[in-house]
Image 1 (cartoon, rainbow, N blue to C red):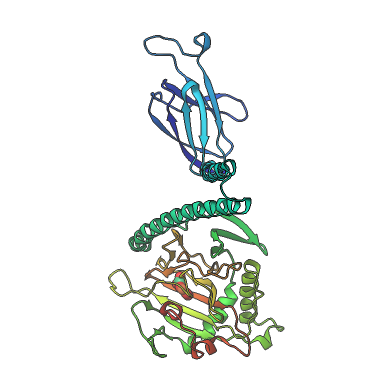
Image 2 (cartoon, rainbow, N blue to C red):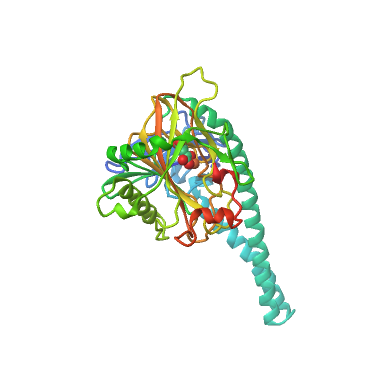
Length: 427
Ligand SMILES: O=C(O)CCC(=O)C(=O)O
Ligand SMILES: [Fe+2]
C-alpha cells in the first residue's frame, strides 16, 4: 500500500508515546523514543491502512496518569489515503485527524455557514424577498469559492516556478550521473505481453517506458534505410529554413513507411503500426498513419570525455507544452525507441517531472502531451532531453505523432498553412 508521512502534534499537555499496531498479531511496536513531550511534534512515515496507538505516560513527578482513577488514557488513528495528514493529540488524549480532504471540507462548510448566517439574518429581519436572498446567498458562495481557487492557483504557480528553476539545475547533474538508473515507476502495467512502466500519468502529461517495444530486426531495417541518407540534424531557423544548432547535435534520417508492403510483413511498416496501436491504446483519438511524419532515425556518436561539444539533444518539448489549447495538425505524442545504447551517457531525461530514463536495448519511451478531454496541452512535464552521449553510439527511432492530419492535410501542410510552431516543435 502507498506510503504516507505525517506529523503527530502533541497538544495534550501530557507526555505521550506512539505504538504501531501490527496488523496481524496486534503486537504493539514502540515508534517514539524518546517520548513525545507536551508541545512537541513527531514525524512518522507509514503506509495507508496502518494503525497506531497513542498512550499517555505517567507524570514524571506524580508517577501517575491523569485519566479517571489515574488510568493512562489512550487514543488511536489509522493512516488514510489522503495527503497532508496531521494528527493532533488534544487534551484528554483526544485524537484529531485532519488531512487534505477534511481541511477542504472544513473550509467549504465554514464558507457556507458564513453565507447562510447572512441569509438567515435577512430572512428573520424580513430584509428583501426570497429571490434576492437566494441570489445573495449564491453570490456569497461564488465569491468565497473563487477566492479559495485563486489562492490555490497562486500557490501552484509559485511552487511550479520554484520547481522549474530547480529542474534547470538538476538537468546537468542527472545527465552527468553515469550511475543514475531509471526512476522508479509509479505503476507497472502490461500491453500485448510487454511490461509498461508508468512514470507519470496526468491528464495532459503521460510518460511510459515500454520494454521490448522494437525488435532487433526492425532496428536493423531502420538503420539500413537511414544509412545512405544520414545527415546532420537541424532546427528550424524561424524563417522557413533549417540550421545546424548546438541544441541538437546528432545525425538523423527520415524513414518513409511503405504501407503497401505491410501485408507482406514489412518490418518498418509493422513497427510503425505498433507505434500507432500503442498511441491508440493510451489516447482515445484513433490515430491513423495517413499524413503523419516519417519515422526518424536519430544517431548520436560519443567522442569521449574530453569532447566539449558532445552529441546531445537539449531540453525541449516536441509539440506545444504551454498548457494552452491544442492546435489541429500539431504533435501531441512521441515514441522514442532505443536500438543502440551508448556505454556512457545518453539517457532521456524529463527534468520537470523528475523522470530519468536510462535506455535499455529495444525499449521505448512513450510520452503524451495533450489532455484528450479538455484538449489542453501539457504544461512542461513532458519537456525532455537526450543527455550528452560520451562513449559508444546511441541509435534511436522516433515517431512524432500528430492529431488532425490525413492524406489531404499531411503534417507538412500545417507549416505552410501558417500554423505557428514553437521552435521546440521543430527541433
Ligand atoms: O535522444 C533522446 O533520448 C530523446 C530524443 C528526442 O527528444 C526526440 O526524438 O524528440
Ligand atoms: Fe524530443
